[in-house]
Length: 346
Ligand SMILES: NC(=O)c1ccc[n+]([C@@H]2O[C@H](COP(=O)([O-])OP(=O)(O)OC[C@H]3O[C@@H](n4cnc5c(N)ncnc54)[C@H](OP(=O)(O)O)[C@@H]3O)[C@@H](O)[C@H]2O)c1
Image 1 (cartoon, rainbow, N blue to C red):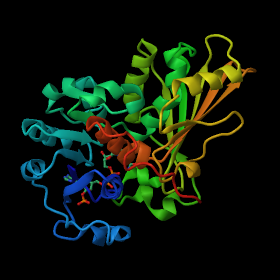
Image 2 (cartoon, protein in one colour):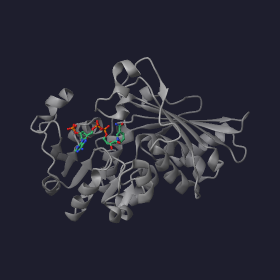
Image 3 (cartoon, rainbow, N blue to C red):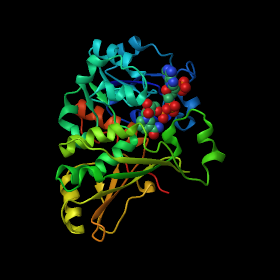
Image 4 (cartoon, rainbow, N blue to C red):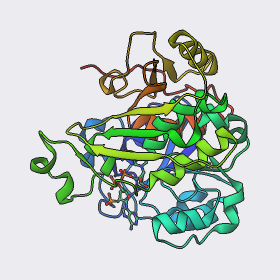
């Protein structure tokens, strides 16, 4: 059995991780930490896990948790995983960070967008960007994984086939994304207050959202040249889910059938990416509660653009499910262990 510890277990991403790990046949929970709920049973904080998750939330004692774990997950705000990574690797264990601290190849990019100093620069070269469909071979041998952000997961999977094959003018890409409110975490804030978000939709982080450089880093690597994107996220009155509608100008004529075949072939054999049949488009409801990324691709011959629609559950493929997928790959387990089920509907 893999002994797995979760630091920041009581946030939304951490709680989904605990739910998935508690049902994983090869995992034993070695410890769950929380700042505000230390000393309380986990199920008291998340009653849906009553009779499923027994551990009591512990104070954050990183060396002790690492010592009793094979793999540690951090589901903390950015800036808090660097010290944990040092301790985890020093003890010869593996770390999967759900935050942004180890997603960037370049510390300066991280520091300029996140406004904190990177205090574990020496570990950046050892960190792998944990998007299995793109970096599977590196993840297999990694001990430190920067689990991707939710918006980047939807955008990168949506664009990879076209960019890799040179079908898009690299600087023509526009990513228009909508997210459910759980994307902002469980902490209270006016912006996520019921009366502020219900029956409303609004753009935020326009021309400056922190997921932009992460998307650009990975898309540039796929395209084989540095590119920029226009990325606009929106907050929508859903609990969970991300829908990204992505536009790009084609470099040469491509038919709808060819575009579909390109995606179908690129993701052939991928357990969690579902390229929908022509005429069918992704919806957040169809991926809620599952580790799937659903993709639909349409060529707009009139404008010479391609439109890709990508849907994920921000807490599963966008966070906890992807983290478990990474743990499975790092542990040599079948990639879908503990992640087999479809989502819930409606
Ligand atoms: N929500 C998503 O859809 C999503 C998707 C992908 C990635 N992520 C990333 O996952 C991480 C967690 O996000 P979340 O949405 O789960 O946030 P959240 O609901 O606000 O939970 C944050 C967790 O971190 C703990 N925490 C907060 N500040 C801390 C501090 N200063 N020291 C120690 N622990 C602290 C909290 O403890 P208490 O419970 O005791 O307050 C809680 O367990 C973030 O880096 C986020 O960017 C989130």
